[in-house]
Structure formats: structure tokens, C-alpha cells
Length: 85
Length: 280
Image 1 (cartoon, helix red, strand yellow):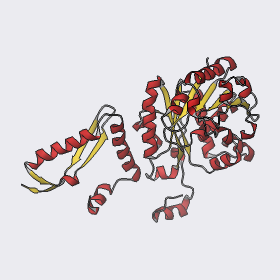
Image 2 (cartoon, chains in turn purple, cyan; image 1 turned 135 degrees about the horizontal axis):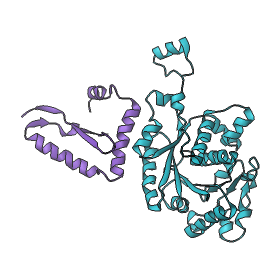
Image 3 (spheres, chains in turn red, cyan; image 1 turned 120 degrees about the vertical axis):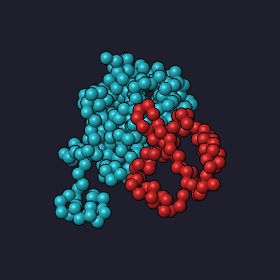
């Protein structure tokens, strides 16, 4: 991740918030709710589909998993687009 | 009502399990309950040291298991709370595997049923191996101690998962060594957030406090030092309020973060904040 992006993404984020996000993902893996392997495969599939239309940089993909409420989690992928194909 | 058998555990070492057991055990005894503390960390005996009882240990749990002495004679009495606080020391020379699960369970249940203890706290060793399983086996409740660091919290989650296998459903969380000012500043995870991530009841919060080091140095529970000085401490308040909540599920949670006021208030504090200081 380039420095300007890390500044942009973490501008509003306190250290404790970052810890909370990281912990959340670690616990999901640990509890077997979403394995690291599944997540990697998902990323690969997304890259394949999106690459049909867009020129993207796979090394810069990031994801976030957040608790929406007690029942639901939301996954979001941040995929930087280099250009249109 | 039958006495309650509670295992104190954490997964990760060095988060303050033994300190917690000594201090909350003492606070319960101080309230008038009969309390037995069992050192479950075979080979690495420490609970006696924290209570300042190390010179009074004669027998240990191995002597009871091998029949060298009776349970009653192996218990070390804490004379500061006569008749209320007892310690069953562990062996310093044996291995954890030397203690068979069944023998351990029998000793704990015997202590409760025949010696009429209200609370039996078993201080579990770190890790998730045999020592942890041994400590958890006789327990009906668990208190998980953690600190606000993601490695410790992740290990706590592992332990909570394992407690399912023991049928221990009543469990709650203590967040120890909380730097209240840092939580306020958003640099440290809040105890409430940690409990939410772990989906567990937050039993209590113990603020970071230098009195705990002094207590360890002197072999006196924090409450004892407070009484000597005639002055309350943040950690002491944490331990006592946790004891209250162990006794009564509905006792309120004491939240030092809500109560926190930066010590350098007023005009000076205003300028410090302006300059980006933490306001401490």
C-alpha cells in the first residue's frame, strides 16, 4: 500500500479502531466462520471477473469485514483500478 | 446454596491471572465468604507468593493426592481474614501430568462439599494444554482474564471456544491492566469493545495501577495495602467491584473510563490539549 493511500485510509482511524478491525477478522478465521483460504479464493475469483472489464492491480486489493448488527457481517473489497480495458 | 467452583483462565500468559485470583479471592473473603484458592499451575507455583504465604507452605496438592496428608492439613490459612481465606498450594517439583484429572476433581468437590466453601477459585496455567484442561475440569463457571492487546484477546477467544467442550456455560470477561487515558484517546481497545468481539459478558475492568506492583513486591493483596494507607486505589476498586459482581449478577459494572477526568484539568490542561498532549 502506498504511503498516500495509507494516510488517506487511516486519517480518521484511531489505533484502537484498527486493532478492532484486525481482531474481528482474526476471530472470524479462528472460529472457522470464514477461513483464510476462502477469503483468498474469493479474491482470486473477483480478480478474474473484474479483469474482463478493468485493468486492476491484484497486489493492492484490500478487504474489510464489519459487523452490521448481531446477525450480519459485511465484507467490502477495495480494488484499485489502474485503467479501463 | 452449594459453593461455586470457578476457573480463572486466559490462554495467553502474563495477563495477570494469578494476581487477579489472589486479589479477587481476598476481596471475597473480606466480604465474609469462605474462599479457597487453588493454584493450578503445577511446577510453576506463584499464588502463595502473591499472597505473601510462601513461607507457610508445608504440604501441597501432590501430598493430598498421594495420601501423605489430608486435604484440611494441606490448606494454608490466610490469617488476615481468619476462617475465610485458604490456599491449596501446588507442587513446585512435579509435572502437570502427574496429577490425574479424576483425583483433582475429587479434591475440589470434596473441598466444596465437606469444608463448606462458598467460592473455590482455580488459577489455571497459561496455554490450552493439559494444565488448562485439569484446571477447567471441575469448574462450573469460568472467568477469562485478558488485557487490551489483540494477541491476548485472540488467545482468550480460543480458550472460550474450548470451554464449550467442558460444558462451562457461565463465563465472563475481566479486562486487566487498562490504561484508562489511552482508551479515552482511542489508542487502546475499550473493554466493552473487547467483550463485544468475544460475545461474552463483561464482568469487570481493572485499571493499570502501580499499586499492583507494590502489592506483588510486598506479598499483600491490593486491598490490604489500601487499608494500611487508608487510601483507595483504582486497581483496588476494580477488584472489589468484580467481587461484588461475582456475588451478585446484577451489581453494576464499574467503568473507570466513564469516570476518568484528565488529571491536569483547568487552564493548564486546556493548553496541553491544544498542544496535542494526552491530557495526563
